[in-house]
Length: 405
Image (cartoon, rainbow, N blue to C red; front, side, top):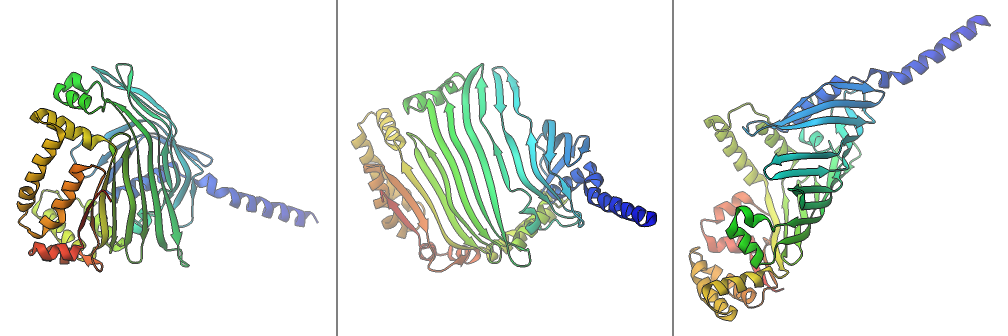
């Protein structure tokens, strides 16, 4: 009986130890080394401070970040980084529930005194693939969400820039074999406010223009929405919007196919190369990569649309005043110049396409949109070849121009 009891206690103890082992075995240095290796494959160079572990929490004493191949001054993040919910798996991959960064509240310039504060900075749903896996498929899954709370920048004690918050999210779907199937991404920068009244102190001419256009204070939002399917490299950006009160809204969208993980793998390999970017070998690689992408990528459609919220009329009024005429006279002057400007392109077919729409916008600035929609998805290489005959390129692109629609 004693032997059986002793054996049972030993077995129970071993089982408990086995369950505790992953947390006990978590290695802080191995974790930060994986971060360095993964982002190194994307062209970044991370130099971490001392790392320590407490249960499933890894703390790192700051990091210096630079981009390979650039001579720019490295970005030094001189604060403690805290990774919570860190777990290592048998294949050598890591996950972390969240990386939190302490609030920033510091001066960055002395004359004038520049001060910045940012709160609520987090990265969530982090994943680091196993050692040796730096494929594009793995790289795309490293972060689920990035966000921050309010950001405030001040100049000599006066607030000049404020943002309520920033957020970027990635939602991943997988097929039956756990291979990445698609990514849906959204980015928002909400309630951007800026005081431009002090610009004139250093640049009087620019300050005068800002004053004349009523842009001493601006308010707006930026947002982007994207869906990307891996199998055919179909990338749809259905919104890329900058929308500012009393100025206007600019929305850029595009729809392409062929932007596959294989293409991205080649781009990453080129970024991670140790070749001097200015060397002949590196430039030859870049040229070959450009040709490959031109052949692989096909345009389904794209558009650039501007909706005016008052700035176009103010610009016309200001320019008319500088010319010494009223706005109606100034608009007529511009309309006589438009055909000559379009003719400089050497493509007569653009005249009927562009001139009437530009004239309509000048008469009544509401909206202006340029859109391409080829009859069928067309590769960039084919479009480049068609550029030898610009008139046929217009047809190949399905180019349209519309004002006030």
